[in-house]
Image (cartoon, rainbow, N blue to C red; front, side):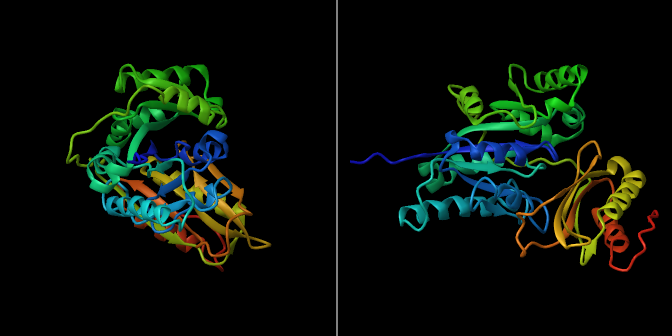
Length: 329
């Protein structure tokens, strides 16, 4: 009798802006992850991370209907089951493993519960490991302030300090200390400019054994966090985008947790990727590989203020025909 093949699942988690997608793109290009499929879960109306990952894998799957630990859980289960049947009936090629990238606000415990206790999924898949990405500079404050960040570390087999090349020695020391305080004995790796290879990651995971969770695990979330989407019709001057985002950051401060999205840039309607990093640095870059079917707009994640207020301001100030004079709401 043939032995059933159990496909490994690598759960990639980490707080908002920690650099999960950048590392995922690196790992998908490494030979150790050849034949892998990615499921990318995003919070908000429109997904971006799957498009950014397409440079590394042809058809990453996207869950954009909500956090996989909450309303998106059934979508994740459905995706894993569909992938199994599609592979069985040769509608898709065989795959070596599945990498599930969670949203930055995910509590991984219900996801692990789903994989372990959903009958078909438990028969055909197993958790290879949980990797939590921690920003070298903003990670310690996020661990202290956000339930989700602590939950991600709690079940992590390996913690990866990202953007270590951007941190000084004191910040790196603080990041290591915060991780160990939250999870004593944690295996901690560093990534500088996304240089951590898949081989080194898998080597660290080898022999650790995935952390188990109790059946019926329920997600816990930091109160007061909301999301909204700001449509951006028309072309926008990148300098104007930077000025208006800067004004919003000055007015709303730490209440803005994350901004990211796509817009068409003047003068040639090229795509640009807009991201606000955890330290509120505004990053605007060209995105020539983004398809024409993408929807321009910004996803805003905020705390202690309705994200819809920030979205309305950005939509108004970035609307075609506006002079671009930034002002407070």
